[in-house]
Length: 58
Image (cartoon, rainbow, N blue to C red; front, side):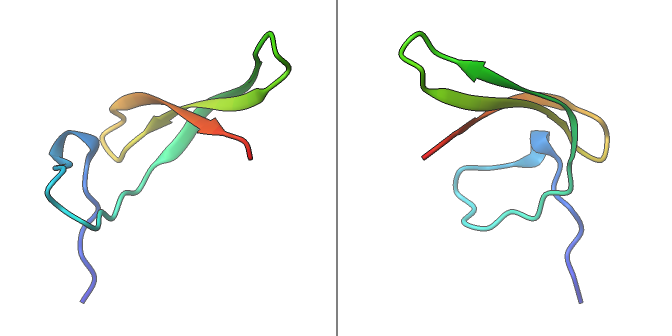
């Protein structure tokens, strides 16, 4: 029996495993002055609560 998806607002640091269903609403690449790049995302959960996330390369 599978668990339901957790929403962003229900996440707790004490829990080791989360099951999160989300979709990417927007994404873009950011280039720092030293040439390093990372991707930033706006993601939404099942109730379309939005958060911004950074994905660092390397």
